[in-house]
Image (tube, rainbow, N blue to C red):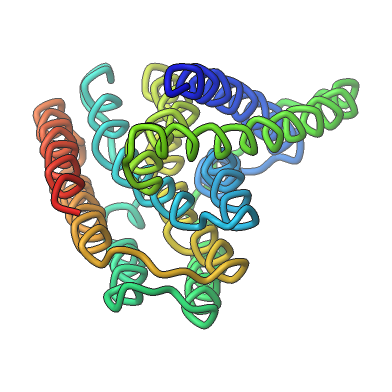
Length: 314
């Protein structure tokens, strides 16, 4: 039975990633239609759309009574984005990832927001008040940054009104497919975890988090290969902040829960440390180098080993 649940889990995860990719694609097309800047498209639009896999998994998990599964997906996705995805993007870039944005070079609010859910979860429980605080922090951050984003003046000049309705319809279809595949991903992921006797949170931390980060990885790789490095960084960082605040907060509001404190200590610290490394590399110069990308990948490997060891202790 474990093999059957695993195959169904992987199949559901595949459709989850594919539907998220299409949702991101058509949302980005709509954003370009309305002449939004590259920064807005990447940090506010594409990044938010990129969180659809984690968001749907987290919310469905909360509704089905296993919110810790969703938390594992969100935190694991953040670590994967900051290390595996950002590292691969740096390695496969033409000459490293160029950092042009002054906000990206100087803004340490990212680190404070990554630390916030860790501090709230030190007691091994997330209450509805914690969820409200996380959502409020995320919304405030995005509102503040939206005011500052006037610095990013490059806009798209392509408009094709004839495809507007087509993109809207395809977006709705892809979102519906996303919700259905997310429901089955949670269902079979939990069953598989029960079959092999590992915590559902660990399945979310590793297996689903890698799959759900594929949209960001594909988008960011295309961005750096076409010399839109700022869009790659905006997508990754925007996704991480959305996951750590608004989506995690919404999951907690729906279904407050308790968890093994050791898992949040290890995972939360790893997420903050990954964010610290990423911010330090980005602010160290004008380019995120290939060597720094290797460091991020090495950190991800250490994280996976640590999570496996911690799971054996629980």
